[in-house]
Image 1 (spheres, rainbow over the protein chains, first blue to last red):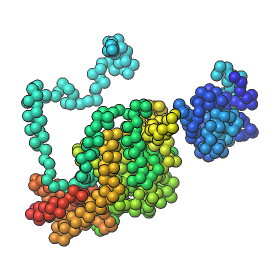
Image 2 (tube, rainbow over the protein chains, first blue to last red):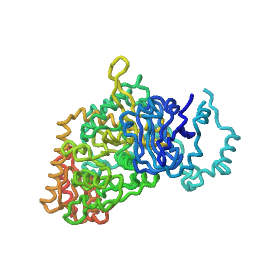
Image 3 (cartoon, chains in turn purple, yellow):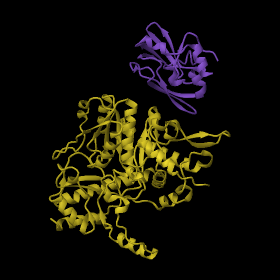
Image 4 (cartoon, chains in turn orange, yellow):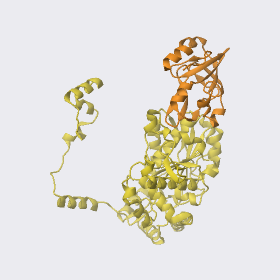
Length: 125
Length: 445
């Protein structure tokens, strides 16, 4: 399986898309497929401070509940409100409409500790 | 099936891992006086002797002829059908209905219980039940902390003191601070919680108040709910369930969570229970509710069916991150409440509440009119009343000798309330009972 080249990936199956000082984060299509049909997501609050690899929310599928681990540190500036009523977007379009939150990056150096698409593909192979 | 005990090597390995020399060292915290070896156990008896001994011990129980004791537990008429229903083996011996294909009867009974509790409380969703009122109240506080991501809860001093102690225990583990909001204990005061005191509490996850409160007084629940909401907190209403037949439903005055001791609904008064805890909330909070929930659904053939639902919150799925790891449903007692509510119906429950309130008025009036006692508080009460009575503790003890329990001596828990008794009445309280109390109190003056 291949993954978008413009993203960075964590071992906990979250992705980061950096745009200047901000980043969009979400879970990977691999994670969404493994979870199965997602029925609920507990989103972080706008203004919440995320720390890298710390928990920031919960995702519930028909067969499991999992914590969401922040791939990078920063302050949440926006959350994907559409997921509250349509959590299935996480399954349908994990890297697009299924984004979870936008974050004001605290430390861009943290991105170096994440994987690129090829490394993540190896990780999930 | 082969029984495979731990080997000596297994045990040595485990002891080494936890860092103790012997199994006995694991019990070092148990005082020697209460260890098995130190017990003085009488010699073995044959069945005939055991029966005689137990009968002798049971004979030492003092069963009061007349009781005005309430203080959180109330003696009501229990229709015979309640015992008949819960005695059925299908219910009495059934286990958690994890398998819907073989558990429709149990699941339907729980679903009906939840529906009845929702109707009674005016809330949107109720759990399958909890151990008792104290644990339901404590779970409500923990739930409010999860919902608000705050770690401080406020509880009115009008909440049952036993329930508050359980709340303290539940909150001590996760490091949740419990602050107590005093009630007006002044002579002739209202004996209620002041809504204006809530703002000064700062950031709280919830305010818990009781209706009626422990002293029988009716609290300004709507104002307390508004005050809690103004602080960004949830309002937890700890209610007495039969009172809901005549008082406003918690859902109507802004309660976010309702917790209750369900004992008055068809469960006999007994020391240590089993009782049943009730909890209800709004649907928006359902994922933070503790314990089991039964939902109604359709099977593949379109027939109505029932299943445990939203199980991802629960400990058998979510382990240490479950909404609660210290609860279960009290299925048989919840079934007793279901059978009771079904037997008495909405009109019957209203009659129970009205008769209880009428007899409490008769009781207070009878004592006041002959100058034996006077109400300690102003304000309103329902089925239980706090009365001032000179030399209350001594006379309470003297009446107990005569087979009359003259309510609860409040100064045992609240020194400020010297010479006061908390007296309850229900539909089982007769005019003769009240007359006997008056005579007995006059004779001990």
